[in-house]
Structures are given as C-alpha cells and as structure tokens.
Image 1: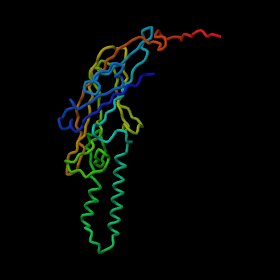
Image 2: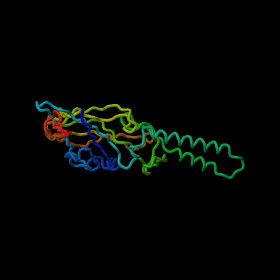
Image 3: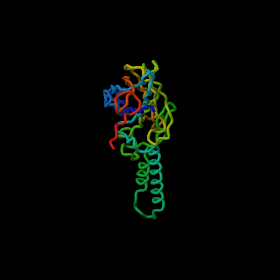
Image 4: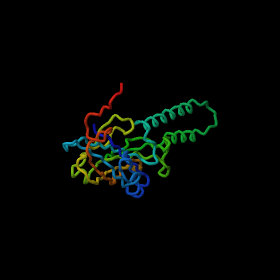
Length: 264
C-alpha cells in the first residue's frame, strides 16, 4: 500500500496580499522530517521521498503526496465546513428576535429606536459577494479570527479564507516524476477538495515543482464588499532516494521470518 505523505502549506495571507508575493510569506511542513526532509517551516521545503525496490529491481511501492493549504492568523482549520454559514444564520436569527422585541415595545418608552435599529444592523455584519474567477469562498458574512460576525469598514481586522491550490506544475511534473490531480472529498475540514499526487519513487534525484495558489482579499465593487482572487505562486521540491526492500526484523531481504528454537 502506498505511503501517504502530507505537506502543509501555511500562508500569511494578510502580508502576502500586501507585498503581492508568497516569497517569505509561506511556511511549508511535511511529516518526513525524521526521514531527511529539509527546510521545515520555511518556503524552501525539500520533501524526502524514500523509494524501495524488490530484489529483482522492480518497484516495491509508490508514494502518495497530499497538499493541505491553510491561512495563518485566521479561523482555525479544525472547525467543520459550514461554520461560517452557521454563524451567519445565528446572527440573522438574533436580529429577528431583537426586531420583534423592538416592535412589541410598549408605546411611550423613551428608548432611541433609531439607535437600536443601527445596533441591530451592525450586529448583522457585512455580507460579501464573490467574482466569477474565484475558487475560494462563496457569498458569506465577514468574520474575525475568533469566528464572530463583524461589520466590516475596510480597516477592521478580519479572517481570510484559506488559500486555494489551483495547479501544481514544473520539473517534477514535466519529467513524469509525480502525477498531481485535484480530488473531491467528503472531509468536513478541507472544504471538499484537495490536491494529491502519486510519485514514481524509482527515479532518484531532486526535482522542483511550483504550486499556483489563489488568495482572496476584500474590495468594494459596485458598492458591495467582494472577495477578489489574487493568484500567486510558490516553489518546493522532492528529493527521491531508493534502497532495497528489507525485512524490518532481520534487516535482510524480504522473506520468511526466522523462527528461534523453542526449549521444551
């Protein structure tokens, strides 16, 4: 069975949008540090791929890579898919309850109705739109990093959508070292899509590849706050080594395990 390797693509979205580059704003991690990966936590990750072959020289197993992009300083990725929609619906219900209380208020009270309506409007937050080119969020309300709906004015801090990998290409793909593709998934955290690739672990060497990443920033278009896509790229590499398939107990070739003599 292929070994599953995970590569975390952590992006400082706010700074990347400001500087218009992922250089210095991307932090890559994988689960092969103890097996030889280098550049952990930087933008220069080289993922170690340990290939192996049988005694006759044929490939023993391939490797599978999975890329998981996340946003630094946003809502934690552990919340389930649909969390933003749930928060938006809750603020709508709360606003309806407050409006009902305001309508049923006995006449003659000195409360400032206009101020209460303004407060209700602010508690509803700011609803966003999307452009046709976006691969990221659908129309939703703006949240802060704690998951609270906010009324966005263009300056307040807010949570950015997770980065979206839109393509993986470069030397490793051109030389048919790996075969990447985007897959659908019922996973409640990865938003239903992820990139994966099978690696030919018989081709030893170091091979570079590039990820096309789409970020999103809030801009006003036609008077509406809209998630505008921003397409950037970042680079990484694979380092493939190969060694004979060995028995973990005997450190020799794969075969029958030795049976020690049993004393009666």
